[in-house]
Each structure stands twice: as C-alpha cells, then as structure tokens.
Amino acid sequence: MLELFLSLRQNTPNKSKVEEELLKLVMDNGYSSSVASMVLVVALIVMMGFYISPPLMPPWGGIMALIFIVRLWATRCYKRRNIQNVLVTLRCVRMYVAMVVATGLLWGFGVVVLFPVGEPLAQLGLVFIVAGLTAGAIPILSPMLRLYYFYIFSAALPLAYMLFSEGGEVYLTMSLILLFYLLVLINSAKSMQAALVDSLKKGFANEELVTNLKDARVESDALNEELVAENERRRQTEKELIKAKEVAEAASRSKDEFLANMSHEIRTPMNGILGTLQILEETDLQENQKQYVKVAHSSADALLTILNDILDFSKIEARKLVLEDVPFNLSQVVKELVSLFSNLAKEKSIDLKAEIDSTLPARLMGDSIRIRQILGNLLTNAIKFTDHGLITVRVHCLPGSGNTIGVRLEVEDTGIGIAKGQQDSLFQPFTQADGSTTRKYGGTGLGLAIVKQLVLLMGGQFGLSSELGDGSTFWCELDFLVPPSGELEAEEIKDIPAKIDELAGSVLLVEDNKVNQMVAMKMLLSLGLTVQMEENGERAFHACDENKFDLILMDCQMPVMDGYQATRAIREREKSQGLKRLPIIAMTANAIDGDRQKCLDAGMDDYLAKPVKKDVLREKLGHWLG
Image (cartoon, rainbow, N blue to C red):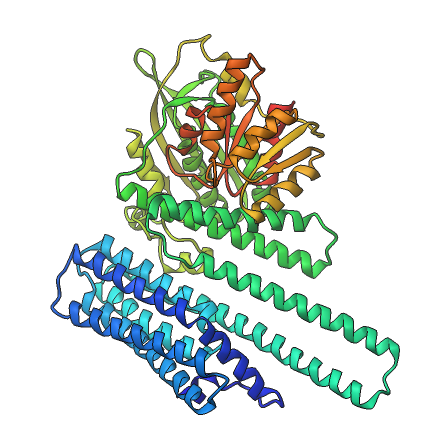
C-alpha cells in the first residue's frame, strides 16, 4: 500500500531519496493532521446533534477516535524508530498510511449516514467541514499525491452525490461547485508536490555535483562560483516553500465563529496578497511576469468577491445583517462607482455613464455601504453580460411625504438580455439564467439574490425589464429620510474625495501582522509619506508622546492593547491636555456590519476595510492630509 501511494512518475537515480523525504514530510505532520481530523469529527458530531440522532453516530465517532489514537501511535513510533530500526519504522509508516485511508473512507461513510436531509443550514455547515478537511490536507498529504487523491475523493464524493440526490437547482449547483472545488484542490496538490519533488531532486543533484567536484578537482573557479549561486537559489526556494506551507496551514485552521472570524481571518491574508500584487505590478517586470501578476490579481479579486457574496448571503439568511442609518451623498456614491467601473467597461469598449436627477438632495439618511453594494453588483453584471454598446446608471427622484423622498435607481445595459421564462428564477440563490451562462461568464449566482434581499431589508422594491438579445434594465425603488439642511455641512465636506497628486506628512502605522506591515509600509512610502510603525496600541499611544504625526492608520485587533482601546486613550489625553485632534483611520479586516460604527464610536475619524487598494488609500489619505 505504501509503495502504491508514494510511487513517482519517473525513475531517477535519486528516486528513493526523494520518496524518503516526501514520506518524512507527511510523517512529520502526523500529529497536527490527526488532531485536525479529530477536531472536525467532534465538530461534525456536535453540529449534527442539533438536527439528527442517527444510531450510527456513536459507533462512527468511536471508530474515528480509535483511528485517531492509532495514527498518533504510528506517528510517535515513526519518530522514535526512524533511525534505530528501519523495519519497525516501515511498519509504523504503513500503519499510518492505512489509518489515513481508513479516515477518508469513514469520512465518506459518515457523510452518507449523517447527511441532514431537509436541513439546508446544516448541509452548508457539512459542506464547509468537508471543504476544510480536504483543503487542510493539501500541505500535509500532497507529498504522497495518490494518498491525497484517495483521501479527498473518499471524503468529498459521497457528499457531492448526496447533494446531487437531493434534487433541485440549488443542490445540483452545490454538488457541481464541490466537484469543481475538488479539481482546484487536485491542481494545487499537484503543483505543491511538483515543486517539492523538483526542489528535492535539484538538492540531491547539487550534493552529487559537489561530491564529484571534490573528487575530480578539475572544475574551474567560475564553475564553483556558479555552483554557490545555484545552491543559494535552492536554499531560497526551500525557504519560500516552507513559508508557503506555514501560510497554507494557518489558513486551513477551522473557525469557531463563522460570521465574524471568517471575515477577519480571510481578509487579513487577502490584504497581504492583493497589496503585494499591487506593489509587484509597479516593479520592473518582464511581459510574461506582468501577465502572471495580472492573472493572480484578477483571481484574487474574484475570490474576494465570491467570499463577500457567501458571507453576505449567510448573514442575510441568519438575520444578522444590520443596516446603518447615517448621512451620505448618493450622487457622490454613483459618480465614484461609475469612475471605479469605467476602466473595466473600457476594456470591453463599453461606454459607461451616469444620469442623476438634478432635484436629488445633497444628503440622505441610509446605509451607503449597502447602496454601493447594490449598484456595484448590478454594474458588475451589466459589464459581464454586455459585449458592446452602453451602460447607463440613472437616479430618479420620486414623490415622497414629509421629510422622506423616494429614489429610483436603474442600471440599463445593451447586453444579451434575459428570456421571460427565466426572469422569475434569476433572483434565487446559486441560480443564473441557464447552465451555459455559468459556463461562459462564471459567477456563483448569489449577486442578484443578495441585491434583492438588501432592497427588501431597506423596505424597497426591486425588479427588471428585459428582452432576450435586447439588453436589460434592473431597478430598485427606495425611500430615504432627508436630514434638515445646514446640519451636515461638515459631513458633506468630509465625503468630497481629495484630488491630489502628491501626498506629504508623517503617518503612524499601527499593525501587528508582519505581511500587512510590509504591504502598508511600501504603499505609504510609495505615496511620498514618512512612516513610523508600531505593532500594538500601547506602543502607538507612547509614540504619540515622543513624536508628532499628521495621521494614524490603526488596526483594530492587536495584542497588549487593541485599536479601540488605543484610540480612546489618545482621545482622552487630547481632551485633558487641550491638544489638537489627530486624525485616526481604522484599517482593519473587521468588515462585518457594525464594525465601521464601532470604530467611529471609539473615536476614530474614518474607516478602511481590508483588503486595501492603493488608489482607495491614496484618496482617503489625500482628504485627511490635504
């Protein structure tokens, strides 16, 4: 069995050494792999206990616990015997591989037995558990690629079958997404193993080369220098692989609090990825490298969009989405969105324009973030399904009563249009017009469902008019409270984006994440600013005593003293000593509803949600430093 799962495609002189190293990578992670699997077993049993009580659940959990104990024993046996007794070591490894195989089979069996028929929320939780189980195994089992394939297929294919068997478009879509997810995992595992094998082969080749050079002593000094440089590149590659493995392991840890922690933990690394890609784009790259970076940036943006859609949909379904009621400039929101999407439209030779009613009040009370989300989703769809022509965003004022005004928002395109028979199902989650739409244009089918739910939460109406092949018009009608004139002049000034080419000033960056420190530091320095960095709120508080700053960029979740506590302390000192108010902008991965208001309540002046784009950061800093 061990030979079956470990065999490589090509026979090479160093094949046995490579296999030994791959095996060592798998066994060295035996403890963490076993513990993670058992944690997911317990999570599944606890979660399913709220919905079903099948008689096979206790025996299944007991067998899983027994396998967990045997896996730990096999790992300990390997680490104690791997030098003293080769035969005993081989037996330990075979026992561990057999237990991994048994774990995958039992996961598949458990999915079938414990599948909560008729419980969509529990089924979604089961999908996330299996997704975490299969994704988390990549850095651990990918050195033994066939073992990884067996493991994920055993665990995930039964779930895909159960979803497919449930019937209906939603479950069919979920099963197809799960199968596509497996293909992505297979590709990632193949890439990781290929990189590991290539690195090991080159490392062993270098060792042989060094030996031959020492024996022959006929090579020139130039060849020796080349060898040193090559070894240095190999060491750097190995360090990068180790770092990538650590990041992958950290990202695969399960989250206890889905809505809040999932958002924070995903946005933090996404900020590092997107920020690094933005910085990399500004460096001197070859043409093929520029293309790779562009593809990676586009894929990261698409992933963030999908994650935001899933998170928003989950919050709406759980009735945990809270709308803000703050003053905002609707005209400014529309203009900013048109400006933001203009480049994307221009790439497809599409004209994008806005038509705004001249009677629209300067300020309205509402949730500007959700209005941006509604219009942003509609604009994204319009651009996606339009190949040429024009997209128009319209804002019309409708009759209201008292201090309330009605507003009709429209997004009209000249795209492919939608057949009458398909329009009713278009706003269902995970649904698009037909299967060919998904294949050609992509997407999760959540965008319009989220838009409709947001409009309904705001007490409005939502609809569309469309003819197949003749474009579409999506519209919504909402009521807004108009605040008394003269009360919000300061707010109006605050929302005007700064048009500034060069920035100047001293910024205190407060951030504990090393990757985000690097990304933010390079962005700020590239904007011409002077930057001092502190890693927690307490050090930031004392730094304000020692130096003078023009602005603070403050993370929220940090050790010792978090961003909220630090901001309150700074505001109290300013008040007690009569100091000028120092602008503080939250730059945080906390991006669920209420986090922005929580930052403002703590005394911060503005809010940036990670991942942070450089042009958005420039605009925000341009206002406060301008």
